[in-house]
Length: 89
Image (cartoon, rainbow, N blue to C red):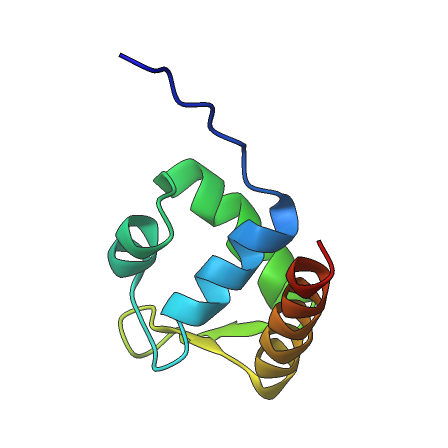
């Protein structure tokens, strides 16, 4: 059986996954499963993303996490650069 080599995701890839899952609003559990993270890692990322203005975390709506306009801009640029990079390989 051939062994597979897995490449770890970069911080930017993890951030993009979180923002993608949270586009329509999501609770932590959905993001953990959708972005393939654990709760501790998600907590660390959410603190940084909220501070950077890429997500909002509602305090009165059961902790719904939503991607902000700035977060959408991050996604647009991230996937644009990724596409440009892959096209030139």
